Image (cartoon, rainbow, N blue to C red; front, side, top):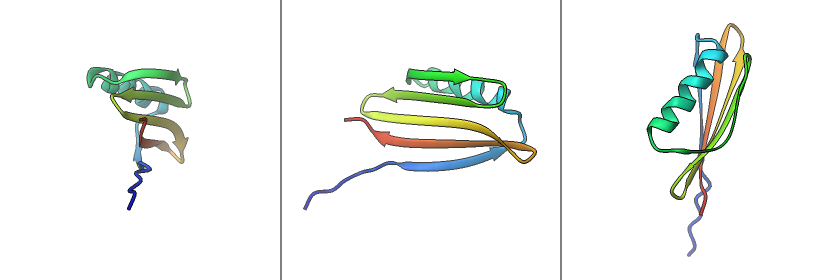
Length: 78
């Protein structure tokens, strides 16, 4: 039997504005040793793709209602 792992997505929300949330996560990933593959930090949204070893993560930040949604998807890279 072959086992496959496809990753997982977590959705979080906060009252903080997107222009504060994106940089927070970019700094947190860097502090934890993640290598940034691509990064966009805007006033109303953010998108970060990073890898560490054989793990990858895509983080998306966007406004929702009066707050901000954070979508974090983790997946194997190799």
